[in-house]
Each structure stands twice: as structure tokens, then as C-alpha cells.
Length: 202
Image 1 (tube, rainbow, N blue to C red):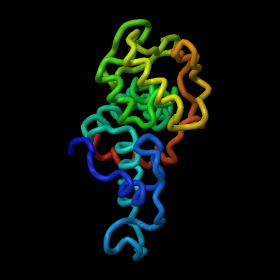
Image 2: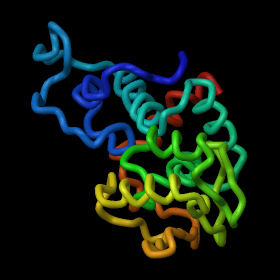
Image 3: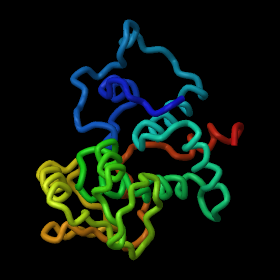
């Protein structure tokens, strides 16, 4: 299944708040569709599937990409769920979003893909690029790029800058200090259920 391009609020109503997908919040508290208000008991599989979908849709990944991240997280020592979240959070598109340079992750991915973002002074247009501690994330030295980011900074997607990042608004330069801690992940998700969901597939 390819990247989701449909109505975003429909997804928010079904899965709950996804800060990376949209800044809008649903007015209706129940799920979309004809039977959205009918509360039915969810199976264990359905609960795990929902948690997996939250991750996939919030970070804008395809099923194949997420499976690849799960396999990569398994090879690293430590909690697979925590490592998985760190891998996703340290993606360049997500880092640009968390710095406030874009209102959502899809908007941040577009900034990166169009060559507006630099890493250590060099243009990087790969959204899945893994940011490492010590790297500087900046804006390309072009008037159009600077105007775009300055406009986005007026209305950042999330109010708080996570503690692993720092950002200089005057120079439009951010820095990755360390790997992100679990408590600074903005998405409300149970990563252990995601790992369990993939335990039969990966």
C-alpha cells in the first residue's frame, strides 16, 4: 500500500491525534463512516493494527518502509520499540518538522525533496536521511527557501522544541545534540504493540 493521500481528518477521527499528519482537530469524537458511532469490541489484532497504522500514517511511511525500520530496530541492542521510535524521529523530514520549519511532516518532506534544507551546509533532498548527533540542519542560502521557512516558523506544528534539538531563529539553523528520549515523542502510541504486530511478519 502506497503513501496515504486521502482526507486527513478522517484518519484523525479513526486513530486519534496525529501531530505529524495534520494540525487540524476533528470536531466529531467518533469514528467516520455510517457505523462510526456503533461501539464494537475490538480484537487484539485490531488494537495492534491501529497502533501500527498510527506510526505509519503519522510519519508518512509505506508498509514496506515501516517493516524495514522494524527489522533495522531488531538488529540494534536495546528495546526494539524504543529504537524504532528513535529511527523514525531522527529522519530528516521529521527533524525539520520538530524544529518548526514546517507545519506537518508531509510539508517538511516537501521542503526536503525540493532542496530547501541543508545538513552541515550541504543540500540533502532525501527525506529518510538519518540525522546524527552533532549535525546542523539549516536552510539553503536562497531567498525563496528562507522566506518559505520564515513563514512556517510563524505557525509551528508543535509548540515545544524537544530537548535533543536546538534552533537559532535568526540564523535559521538547528542542531541535533543527542538521540531523542522516549518522553519527547509527540505521538501517543504503544510501540510494543507495533513490534508484536510485526513479530509474525518480520
